[in-house]
Length: 361
Figure (spheres, rainbow, N blue to C red):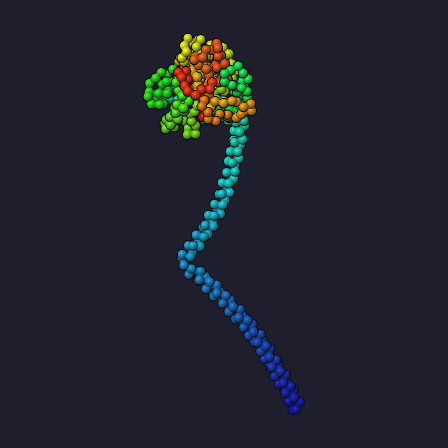
């Protein structure tokens, strides 16, 4: 019985141990599960807090006033517009560069053309103008270089030394001397002959006529604002008388035969000027630049320089002015040099044989 009891006690003890072991194991698993559950709760709490924070941020954004949102949208639109403008500016700049290159090419081409002829002015061309019903024709004289004066010493008024002159701009020269009708149309009296040159004109009154003509021409839009009528300078007059760039080198204006192109006392039988255009014109189509009536030019009397000159004009005041071309007052047989393209005469007053011709530039 004792042995049986021992076995029973042993069995009970073993059962108790097994039960305790199971309980321990259960306790251990419960503790692990509890720990796991605790960690999961903490993680879920953290996620909940994170989502709550995100939700609050979202709510805050939704509560931004409309005005602030509008400003933000405007800023974004401005940024977008600025980017687009910069893009367009780049395109425009590229186009402008192309255009600039085209313009530059055109300028270079124009420069080449201008080099072919000094000071060409495309705006000037042979033109017939009209003032108060009186027409007058102005003929184009293109710029150029020529020899002015002569070395002839057998003259009353020095035309030496011969020297080179360059005129840098085109100009228009009157086809004839100013007529009585044109003078009257400009100065206000009206009437007068359209074929007789206006004479007995002083140097100063010739300038008065030019000033009045410019006032009328600009007021009526006859000529551009940047051009004016003038008395020709002595250099302009001589270049035109010689035929400009078409010159054949004649002694008189248009011929070596005085009777072909000039009215003189000998071939007219008169010591007074007669009608204009009764003789042949010169190379440019200009009449009576040798003979008929003297013509004032816009220079004071003076000596020439031997140096090459560009657009010369003697503006040093004196009591005498230069008149050109000769007239019936002088006999050709005794004073033929006065009718040449280089002949000069210095004078301070006027007489019935002195008129003038106008130019435009």
